[in-house]
Image (cartoon, rainbow, N blue to C red; front, side, top):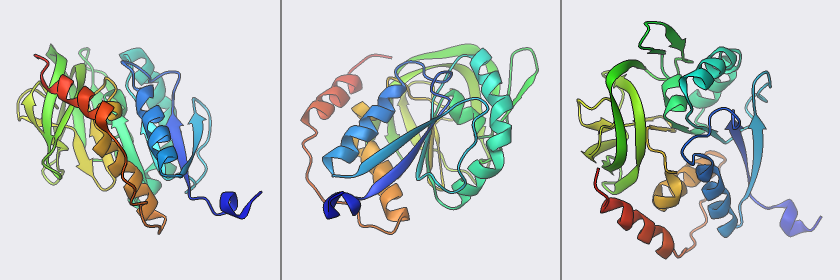
Length: 247
């Protein structure tokens, strides 16, 4: 092993339930983070964690959990309770989390289905979700509250998510349903968590958000984020194209 390889900045990435929660291109978020880390000479070690598999305490810098159908979400809900302590501990210590749709709902208190049954979350965030009668489906355009820049994606959910009074949304909806189709907000931004309903997948068309996730993980480890200019021309074209799509 060369000295250069030995000292290479490495991030540990946990991909939660990739076989069950991977709908509407959510895996593309993982590929985007891997690619953009590589451009900065950051090694991203990806560990897939499924049903019945344990988390290594305080090992991971970034977690990703995608979306799925109700049946898969129920399976994951039961299993993730065994990982609750480790996950919430890492969240409290600043681990970065990207959670999409069903994964986003599971970070909250519960998801109440149309039959009235409750799918338990890990209660990492003060939010809850209830099944609605109207499906929110289509292309979404919103403005990230932190940066003021637009985010684009695709939503397909009937769940209506409501944030606690002290919890901040990720973005303000310009076009689309967002969290619940009522309050005009999309997603959640809490500690180093990014929760969202945006599929499509999200990060390839929103490269600045991908870089923000990497930057937070790098700085949490006590390193400076590599200040390297990266051409995002193709990603910007995809972003602008999505901005023009009708809902």
